[in-house]
Image (cartoon, rainbow, N blue to C red; front, top):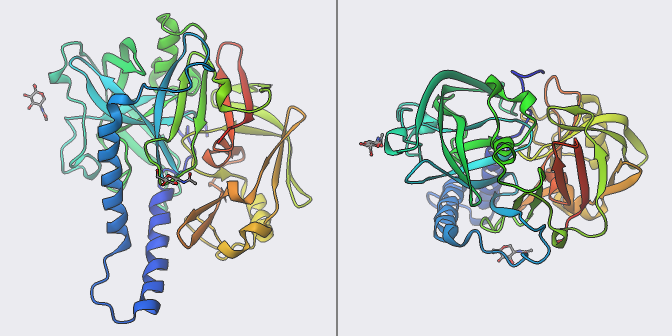
Length: 410
Ligand SMILES: *[C@@H]1O[C@H](CO)[C@@H](O)[C@H](O)[C@H]1NC(C)=O
Ligand SMILES: *[C@@H]1O[C@H](CO)[C@@H](O)[C@H](O)[C@H]1NC(C)=O
């Protein structure tokens, strides 16, 4: 682990899910419509849908700051609206430079660097072809830094971690209406051919502690605080779980919390190791099988599923009756017809219970149901990804090193 292997995520998961989905739907199509000529590949359909969704997103971008929750939000806080791709990717829009260049960045509490694709990345690098890219020559506020930049993200790709490289630049970054001056970020000029190919974002914004920032670069949220733009050094996250409603994907609230987005009281838990948003979880169990007793866990927007150690996954998979327990891509399928009978998973944090129902932890894509649990080589942490964070609203306080949670209102 450590800083280089600084991230465990399932960025590629939904690609894998699409591949699985394609096979399943194709198989059913064949059964159902027999000799239908040239059935349209499902993946193409979904890509078209994705395009439509992102166009819709662009059309809606202008009203992204409109909010009906003004009354319950902490005074002085602002909202970055999130987009949701299939419940496995959540991103927001940042504006770089002057005049502003809008770029979509995945939000990620499991890393602490900001990067975007660079106009200096040639189309021969597949992930840069036909994408929105930051062009420093077109910005009057750009300052060259040019120091090299390299980062690796964990993934469920069989090729191992995703390694990206490029160089550092500095510019003004507009984040939810706050103008951050002199933000250093990376322009990516090289990436593996298959990385993020079908993703809806042009970069990643880390919201982890600066201690895990590659190159010691100050993360955007730290700059927001240092430049006195937010009153309180707190941000909070609300994720919607309607995977077909890309535009209303959720909210990243900068400078506080919004009591209209959760029910009951927030439960506070201290950060145990400041790097990831890591804490000591009291326990976790399913059907009498306790798989955590004072174990180390992290909250990770940026990871799609819940990642457990390998031996734990084997037992959870048995309990859930997964259909493909030997899957090599970390995507485990459950029979959709059994969902209502599957047990709750109960996490206990600071003496309070945070249960997940099967409808919370199974992702459904038409007739394909994907278990919300997976494992990652070399990982011993309990990684609570978007499966958990869709059910629970979370707040993050880097100064007091506190995390807070409460049931999200949907
Ligand atoms: C970047 O912007 C400059 C100045 O507007 C323009 O001349 C150039 O063509 C742009 N480069 C790319 C790759 O879009
Ligand atoms: C999800 O969003 C779609 C598109 O906006 C909407 O038609 C549908 O009713 C929503 N589903 C739920 C369960 O809210």
